[in-house]
Length: 543
Ligand SMILES: Cc1cc2nc3c(=O)[nH]c(=O)nc-3n(C[C@H](O)[C@H](O)[C@H](O)COP(=O)(O)OP(=O)(O)OC[C@H]3O[C@@H](n4cnc5c(N)ncnc54)[C@H](O)[C@@H]3O)c2cc1C
Ligand SMILES: *[C@@H]1O[C@H](CO)[C@@H](O)[C@H](O)[C@H]1NC(C)=O
Ligand SMILES: *[C@@H]1O[C@H](CO)[C@@H](O)[C@H](O)[C@H]1NC(C)=O
Ligand SMILES: *[C@@H]1O[C@H](CO)[C@@H](O)[C@H](O)[C@H]1NC(C)=O
Ligand SMILES: *[C@@H]1O[C@H](CO)[C@@H](O)[C@H](O)[C@H]1NC(C)=O
Ligand SMILES: *[C@@H]1O[C@H](CO)[C@@H](O)[C@H](O)[C@H]1NC(C)=O
Image 1: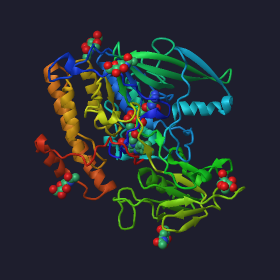
Image 2: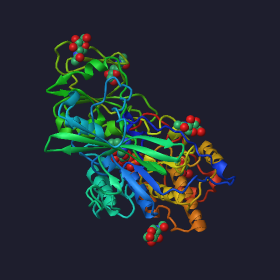
Image 3: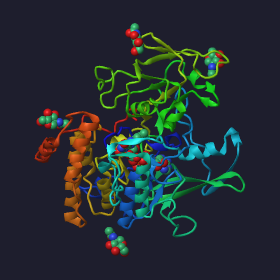
Image 4: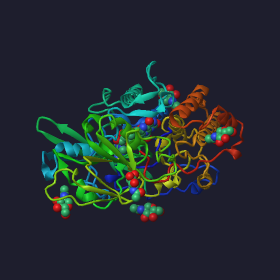
């Protein structure tokens, strides 16, 4: 929850053409009540993404007896936490517009086979392009404490440290998937695949049909055919009454456009490029004895810097001035290790000479005129681009519940709220679509939206986040009084204490205290603090 970076990315944007939003339901047209109504009952719901958010959504929708399909492009659940040695397809330098999607077939269902090297593309590259390996490294540990990084109904083992390894979180999320029959190795209950979860299956496009008021998802599943050494792609479509988008935010790397970057990015040494985005960082040992320049001053850059520091010969960190910087120029939240030489931004990479291998002989000019030489490798830990399935603007039109205000049969799970608010939000999806909780009228939802109330804010906006929790609990429980259903609980008092202790020790001393929570508890809603900024507005993200 806290480190969240707030971008909202949608997904496979690099491959998704985006939703064509053709129908806007007019709730006012159906009734003049103060609540939003749907044009027909909702029975079939698609969930896109099997990370912690999508799994929770699927679990709640199933519990409400809806017909659910869960689509995940990766071969296994876990989302961001599914660690593999495989890395994403290397990013382009300079950044290019998202690639256009591979041609979709003219009709469905359809099948396509790929041979090794076909079109100049290796099979393993097609496979990685399809599922997009995660931007996490082998020794990554969470910056959120275990008590706040967990899913309902599954426990971390008793001796689990507060900072969880990526592997701890992966096991935890997979345990949750298994608990709900959503794991990739759960026995299919009807051949050949589970009727609920479809792994290695990417949503290529979504379209709303005007006549039927249903969503059509275009799907592509990729399978290895080891006997014939081929990949098989199957394309088909399925229709749904409602859709949850839970595709996470860290898919499209952001790389600053610095003069000369294209030339440097082409350099190869020992069969490897010398410039990578942090999404491909896996093991620190390979930096042994080398001079590394890391770019960026956020969570990934400082954590990767600390991880590789003991191995490197020299470690240089190029950072943009920002308001979290302390007197030494370090980001006070996530300091760089002692060893790093913090330098200003890069103004250019001077052209390499023909025949040079690698970048070691190249000159890097900083924007204060200083020239750096002798760098073996550059890591861009510059975060991610907001991209999202709905296309530009969709994410700016969400109610605090995650429903798309123009058409609340579409809802987004918020990455920033996965652990703390995910349990409430996913229950709300199920309740709203089965008529067990009411969404306000379209007009009221826009008003809520404009008021900037109930927004998540930055990772340090702890009190606005707590205020949002109060809002969730109050709303869900009052709807349960009206329509039946179990009550939900606020987060336990111990969890708050953990949060206070953890923040003050790991992040910033005296950031906030127990009393801040008590103060909030006693405030009427009209006086709740609002977030500094909407956590959903798109900028490059911190990671
Ligand atoms: C380096 C790094 C460190 C982090 N550390 C922390 C931490 O310490 N604590 C913390 O709370 N959070 C941390 N996060 C944030 C992390 O994103 C959340 O913890 C959490 O994983 C968000 O869950 P999610 O389900 O919303 O998204 P994700 O976990 O990203 O899952 C989204 C899923 O959607 C799938 N998908 C996307 N597009 C499609 C498509 N078109 N078709 C089918 N499937 C699709 C993806 O394959 C993915 O499995 C970190 C993130 C990064 C990048
Ligand atoms: C669907 O309906 C909208 C709004 O009525 C209209 O603008 C659009 O052209 C329609 N699309 C199709 C494909 O009929
Ligand atoms: C779902 O269906 C089961 C079996 O028919 C029933 O026992 C249960 O009450 C239903 N749950 C809800 C929330 O309607
Ligand atoms: C430019 O930055 C470098 C690295 O921080 C520093 O050593 C140098 O003194 C700076 N030069 C000027 C002119 O400020
Ligand atoms: C970089 O540019 C120079 C000058 O144009 C060229 O000679 C060199 O081959 C380029 N290097 C790479 C790796 O593309
Ligand atoms: C917590 O309370 C203290 C003392 O009242 C106050 O100075 C501080 O700003 C509060 N912190 C937050 C995050 O609201």
